[in-house]
Length: 527
Image (cartoon, rainbow, N blue to C red):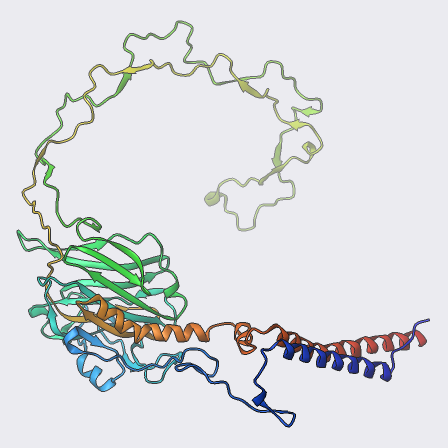
């Protein structure tokens, strides 16, 4: 006979759970390191605050606080952390130009720029330059404190942060290092035609993902300028366009013509200005002679039909590839006298049919219903089978061509435009930096943009800006579970206690539901 658990049993269960909770807490306490006897007085535990190591927060983790990086002007050709809005605004010049060869209504550089905190504020005093507009041309630029001259024996180091706060489907966040000269003296006229020396940075449209590094090379003979595009890195750069987090982009170009591209301090591409760009810096020493023509008698055929071969006498070129099967017989029930299609007996001529215009009316053809159950209708024909005597058109077998002269190629001549530039690093000096963009995403944030000639200076600048920011974001992005474990100091005894603490109300609730379900079943049985 089944027995119900009354209130007494429920209280007993709760009491037993409480005893287990006390026992677990004592076990957890026993697992803790012994405390000094001074911590106890009159049977009460003193509230002793554990001293934290210097530079840590209440959780024992490193304190992360942002202060604008100190800019020693002598170490930089350009530097802007954008935190001092008034000073930064004085550096940057909005373009008032228009794009050529484009409709008037979209030719203006009317994209909006602003100095503001990121959408995901980490520190209120950390600001950036933000492109607010989407689907608009936008251009802004700033002069360098002093031009960068590539003739000095120092590397060029360009470094900046980008946060695609709304992600990116189509658009760029690259920068241009503008060439020194008359065309860059008035930065209000900065546009897509403004001469630049280097273009560097990320770009994406659909599945086409790029990390631009383009430099404009000056021909030492005639002064013409050609864009040289860096070979693509082996691995696609996807995450910066999706995760909406700050990312650090760095380009280092050295006097020995080597270069490195880093994203978040990791090298994603490296090589040489001489060998890893298209088109190549130096043209070939020889080219095909444009005046050389292939002789008419030149024979490029490797094989030819055997001129001595003759078609065999029994070779019938007219034999068909298929023949009616001579062994086939007409199936039983085949109705040769019945057509497979008949005129639709239910059809009638339309009232507006004009015989003079439309011709003599005929009912449409439909399947003959008599043929539905027959083996077939109409004149029977034997099925076709492959012709065993079919050989097709005779062709003579191929043999090696005794007169083969090889593939013809024009002779080589000296390239009249040949030059050899072994120092492509010595590019046109840089006098300004500019952002000339079009994007289908808004709120692109640029931050901590520097141009220097010292890799260590750039690394230190990142350590005091980007690195702190990312460490903070990464720490705050840890899962709730991990953070809860950290709060528990990873002690198993306290975890058991916490589990039991949650188990008691859950068990009571389940027991309550069980009793209710039984009561409902009994009530229905009685009714």
